Image 1 (cartoon, helix red, strand yellow):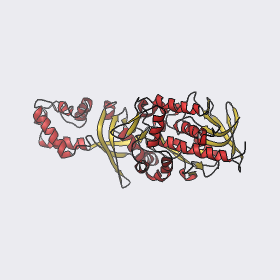
Image 2 (cartoon, one colour):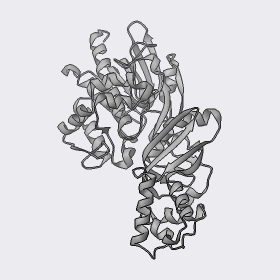
Image 3 (tube, helix red, strand yellow):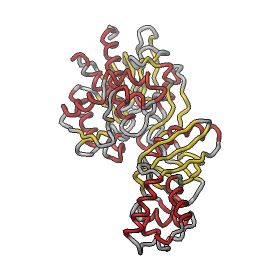
Image 4 (cartoon, one colour):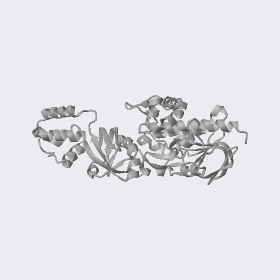
Length: 424
């Protein structure tokens, strides 16, 4: 079987690549998707806790800055297809979106399955052929000059003018992200930046977080200084069985996982448990609560500010008498308590495995990809999109938008190049 564009992987990047390749200039480019799973978008169903945080509501320059040193690479595909374009794309397909106060954008239905259904339906209408249960075992180039490829799969050998690798990274391997794209890219001479966990829970030396597993602090700031750099992240934190997780911690993890894995050293961090209240304000607030609740115990009073489990564990861990009447605290005790609530110490010893990460740090080197087309600089006719590339951003819809936008740019670029070829 012959095709103009073949896409490896039916995740968000692959689906968008297929749609925009097939619809390019209304030529209905013959497009095939090879997917190892029996259905498309398995990982997409897990995003945003099943709610699917599809993008972030900000302008393109601010969006690109979230990717740090990779912002110049990312901005090309964002100008091709912006967050606003993405919301319009779904709205035109009957799926309305909403913006939260923090800028995160979700479908109004808050169902990731609705996002997947829109993408699969659009691809089907465009004439995309899905080959489910058919991972690409190997890709070879027939003619280096004309960029013709053969793709070997369990359903036979296929010939294609252009190939887009959109297999994802190593995170959530149960969804099919097993690193196959890295192997395929390496066969064409591409450099693979070592894949590591990004946006992943962190393991602490201290064991008391285990007592609070599942408990959330909604307004924290996590801070550290290492290698003469000050880093921090704000948002919510969730205690886990061996440490901490939650959006603020996941974003923070992007900044330290390389250091942890390279040096095998621990990192001392501090948690501001009420980030939007400074120390003086917190003390005034605490004293006012004491006046309003003269018979409350310390742990009972703290439970007015924090989850009850955290209040009790905090008192126990840091040697405060939780049953003491709060207003009877000595000034020195109160000062110590307030200080600890603003600078709660923890020690990070490791990150959870890459298989548990929301996204992978590392992948196909961006130095070997043309950011204006997503075409390989090593092998003409080969394109990349999404998480398989060494690109990772913070929580909040940034990574999914990159997957969509890079997929669209790769799909359109591959289709345009295929149309110009008269091989078939």
